[in-house]
Image 1 (cartoon, rainbow, N blue to C red):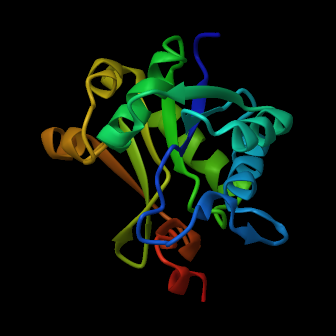
Image 2 (image 1 turned 90 degrees about the vertical axis):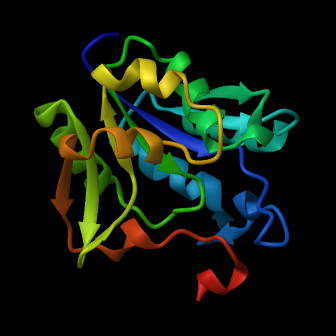
Length: 188
């Protein structure tokens, strides 16, 4: 369907700094990636999750929540390839809100606010909490070709660096937008 914002849950990482598969680490008695997915699908039905090859258990859980699961066969090349994979699976979207499986505390209402802001501005949108830019980050359809070309680990940062004047910042009073979990100590 054309004209909607598609949520992309990036869940194809390796958890190198965490020490184990953080996507399956329990947060509120549920795997972290599924908590993030539940919030995303509640805010943006029809969202897509991007996972690695052989992530059958995670893929099954994501599908049960209602997300379309896309396999990134090149996940080792970095987050950019996951973004490109998700965008490729939803080319008719009016834009993409890129969410991360290691950010389980971002609530559906905030995700909806960002999607609505993206729909309104038709540029690039990101939340800001007390001066710190966070996630999810949204890109309108006009950046589709650039998103599809991403391959390395810098993700959307290279698009932001080419178009800094197109970034719309949404001030939020919710520190979840800057709270990603990279190491076990980030859980405290």
